Image (cartoon, rainbow, N blue to C red; front, top):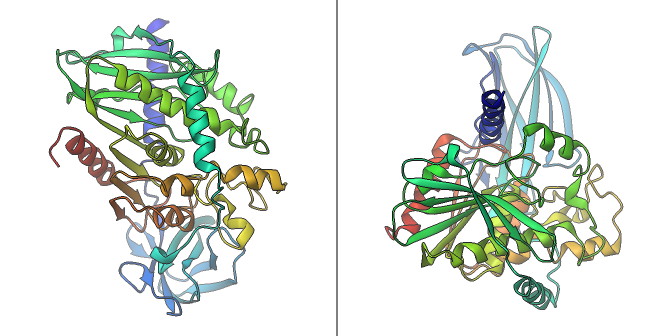
Length: 433
């Protein structure tokens, strides 16, 4: 029974780790591309989308297509159906007069099944500016929050997980007190066994409710790693517990108390990331200087937030950051995940209090305050974190920054992207930059 449970847990964590990997190919592919190799245009310049429908690599004759073109996440301005006689079709997509993204989504009906593809054209994306407000007391609000955090004892508890340790690394279930007594931060801590001083890497999570396995592979390279959860619950429980919580008590958590800036759910989350760093820099094995943070989606957001809040962070690595310019929907364009103000979003009741609250939590306003180098990676076809929202944050970042684009990617990554990020972080942390 014990072995069966361990296998179940291992399968669960492996599934989580591959959730954002490249999607599997299907026998019928709908490939949509633009007539510019970099998918990028000047405002006023017209874009053409090319559609290819392939079955086992060969064109599908007389493929029945329907397509929609419009601003990402907005109602389409073009909706048409056509037949692609030789499996290929060229579509005039129009243009944009202001910086932004124009998306073409195509559905092909083949042998009774429907298959989907898309491409997203960028119009001067480096000129996109945010819509979210930048509260005058933003810095005071967060300075006071960090003072409150510092007054709460860390009360760290480490439990060795022998079954996860390697020849080079000890692995622990970590339990810290967050911004008030009884509120905890849990994570998986991996520390090199060899005596010495080491850099540290904080891994912050994407959205959802799950357990974590920790980053043992990086720790084996002589880097302390800590992978945290955000819900104040242990991260080594049976997978069924997280499923029940995700569908029950924690369902819709990103909007909890959105109308109160002091009670909003992400206050404890953001402070929990700082508390995780409090622990890392307190370790006798920490080298005293080199600390980085990384994550994707919600974790991409938390990476930028943590670097903006905590001057101890020296580098950040962010994949497709969420929670960026969430008020875009109130200005006629896409906003960031979790789409609070979309007509179908998690908070369709757009009260003044909710709009005021997000100003203190939007990634844009932390990006303004980042002072350390960052590596950012995303694609134009992301339907979860719209590129308009991500560029709104990236464009206000004045710190050294590098953006690696994989235009055709959605809310997922190629292995190459993950390798680039991991290698960059290791090189920075180990002083090889």
